Image (cartoon, rainbow, N blue to C red; front, side, top):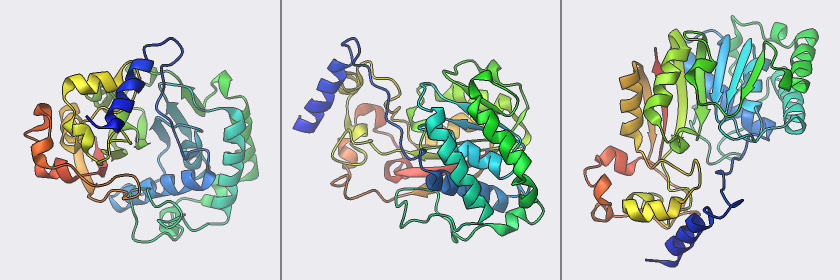
Length: 317
């Protein structure tokens, strides 16, 4: 057993010490430019798949350091946002400057930050020009009206009163927190790999989404630094994994792409698009494990699962 795994197991042991239970770190969403490019990437792919309107009601799973990606949705014309997290990361001090910069980015029809600025962000697009075609029949000037922006900003300042536009729910566990058939789009960015109960999560999303609505998710299948190889987490036995995880919540669930597609279809979704990524960051990992190194639990893993480092999944109700 190499030193890195021993250190990870020690981290699992530490999680049993009061006050040492860790939540997986979030990152990126305190940057308005990050939130801007994430939202418009999801929106652009939706548009290419027939969703031509700005979704009225949106929900984000695991918004992270701020609710900025959902705020990008509101600035661009959405009317209601549900931000659903299991541990509170966001605060007003982070959200206000992100919101203000988002307004400027949309007002200037700014080019989307591309792969040079955010090299690890997926899904990738063919063009990072501002997607004017999306707003040809959706009046962006109206959405950016001074009184509307001021109203959004005031609600953000008073978010804890849970008014009509922004609802930040933390923790969320009960699917009843959102009315059935009420959401046009549910999205997430590198979140669903941290969800333990995939089946119930996809079923909850199916209940929330309207007929004809979508879910749009970018999912990361890498080991999140728990091994030297990007897929080394699939070589750990159940016992080793239990020791590494300890009591740490929301580490990663180790489920490959097929398990997400299966859970989505079992819930009732129609898979519209799957864009698998096969590359991994060489600055973070030394390579990939051999199939012979897979733990018993993953021995029958398909070649598609074994080689997919992340994937974008779009599905429709």
